Length: 206
Image (cartoon, rainbow, N blue to C red; front, side):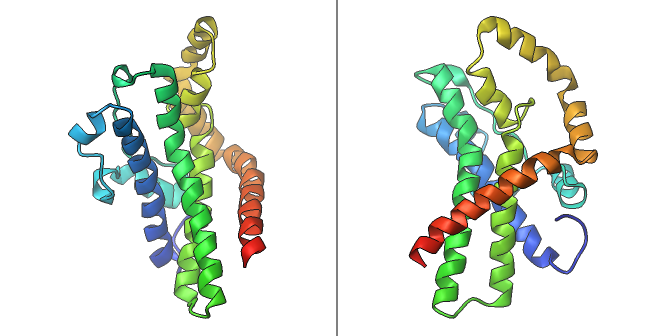
């Protein structure tokens, strides 16, 4: 899925879309809930340059592990802090699932009308794959990923205190899980099921 190959001309734009949509969705969700922090920091935009971390992008392309620039938020601006954090946290992965579904839908529509070129098909293929994988990766409940914020919102204060003890080691844990292939083994079956369900829904119409 990653590395140097002839598909890079399609993979890089697809990856940029996945990263940009994910971070923009976080920013838009926070802004809509009353927190202007992302707007102040220039994150309420679909310009990829506002969201990219160069090192994180390179690692994601060549090592399968990377990151974009996290969107800063101030939960105290939310009317309901706990629900606001959950909404903002899920907005990123949720937007990726939506884009993946739309990529499958566009593939079907363009194929139906006979205008689906090889290049467009390849781009849409990577677009759906990257978005589903990026969504699932971010739902892993290890800080600072979105899944950790979702999990934390359901924990009692005592449980949260214990859970937060792993935060100083979270990056090392993630690196170990990625480079040992554990993340891939976990995500792959879920990605296949989700992509299959999406394709099945689109197939009901086309």
